[in-house]
Image 1: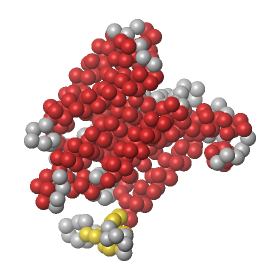
Image 2: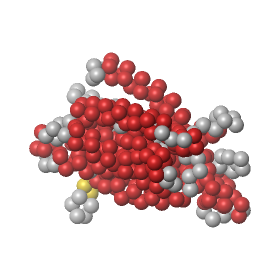
Image 3: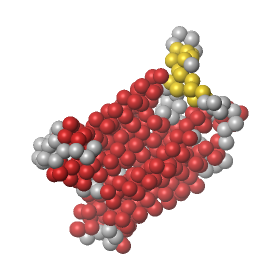
Image 4: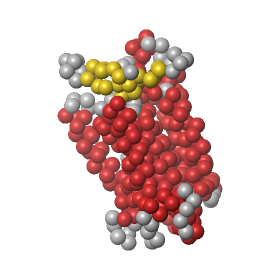
Length: 358
């Protein structure tokens, strides 16, 4: 059933929605523009993934990539696609989706477009955990990943405790997170001074954020985390949307605001920590993906699925650009997202100031 829904006070603008009803009495209202934008972003992410798989010293056409993925093509092509390049692309898609959906949760709960994990210190916390393992425990890849997850989760819990005052409120949460990020960055620099040259080089490479060298060992743990936490977060999409109206209005509609915040923020923290463990603290994807997705869909609410698709498309597209646009000097994806995200952050600050929101 198609229903026009008014979204502007003067009732001159309407949005086309579709309501799906099940025999059990459940109903789901879908915004046509949001669905179309999300589908387009998903197609864009998959197209960028195919292009990235086909890039490299042994280039492949999109047709050859698709044949190799479905079991056809030459044995050498199947080996290159499935064993060498596919894990890197899957890590990129999963990391981008995790950052995108986590950023949407943080920005919705804090009601602030700057409420992003990398701005609030969660990426820095994961970096501290990874550096501690590298410098003091001399751990391998798995130990470094475990340290990053532990550091991110502990940082999240500390920020929640410091920001809690009869609940989590937006600006206090953002201010505490920014302060924590500054202190954690200082701790990162301190740990680097304690590392020898080999450890410092490895730590710096990891902190840059890169998909280079990723294999199936990084894919499966991250895929397991995403398979559990992304559906859990999506299940709270409607309560998150109601939180944007304020706690009183949301509570009047039956939303348990404290529980919604606790569950979604915890899921977002673990997603960020797992993504950081897999690819390093890649900057600004969690900040930009939800905002760009919202501007495309023009729909209220957290836009969780479009944000995940936008994050995946941004990260895979940035990795392709880092490999192909700079000649022999391939850039780690974290360098490119940091450069582009910094410009976006300046634009966002100017826009928010002109609107009188900061």
